[in-house]
Length: 317
Image 1 (spheres, one colour):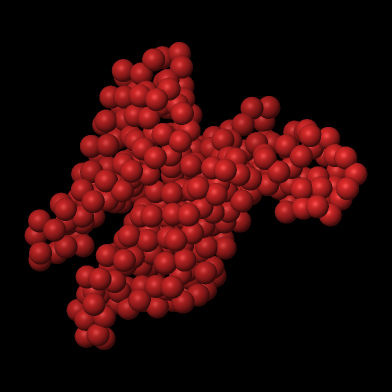
Image 2 (cartoon, helix red, strand yellow):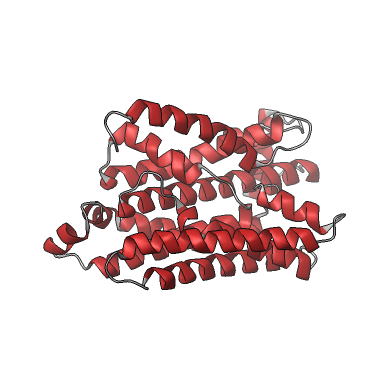
């Protein structure tokens, strides 16, 4: 709600509430179209999209960390981010930056990256989790190289700036129509992980212990990876690459409520949503031109992670 009053275009409290009430049919007096556009199409749509993207990235990171029993794992580990980035860059070159194709290609290649990581992970049956992580690293590296290739052949005046800005992450292109489309995969992924939170507790004990407790490990892991990938790919395709959210926010959640996913998953969703909305407000008001979100999240996430490592070095995760 605070985001509606923050921005370079000055609006008073009464003007914001009048614009909200007019769209909802509660106010009959005429409202300037500029006020409606600023409140509804810019600030409110960005706040909603930031909430969804932050929640999706954070809960995906928490799920991967719990499932792989590794505090350094995030959604990037399966190549989702790099795959989506390649898809967006390809769409910018092939379709002159049309938004719909950027979303479709980013989402599609994000899913392709996970499938490739999974296929590599099934090469050896002895240590599937380790191979899955290794497969993600390999796929992520390949897609990163392909992104560099596209940047090399892109038009330096139009396409290259678009690719670079998209890869740095932003909610500047948020519109209600785009938000509604992107909300579908993100909502399915977040709700799915929320419903699986007690299974994530069992998976975090280890495969042998989980099977001993009667859990079908393969099905549970597949579902968790599917929901986390769906949420991450949905977020990346509409906001670009925003790093560190899926790595840092789950750790803050653990500092507050511990490792129990029954509490950690809901807390992580709330923290991630609030965190990205706050960072977005800073990004669009701190300087005369908007700062890409990926820059701010990296500047915040890097030092915080160093602090976290120093704070927990003696106790482990």
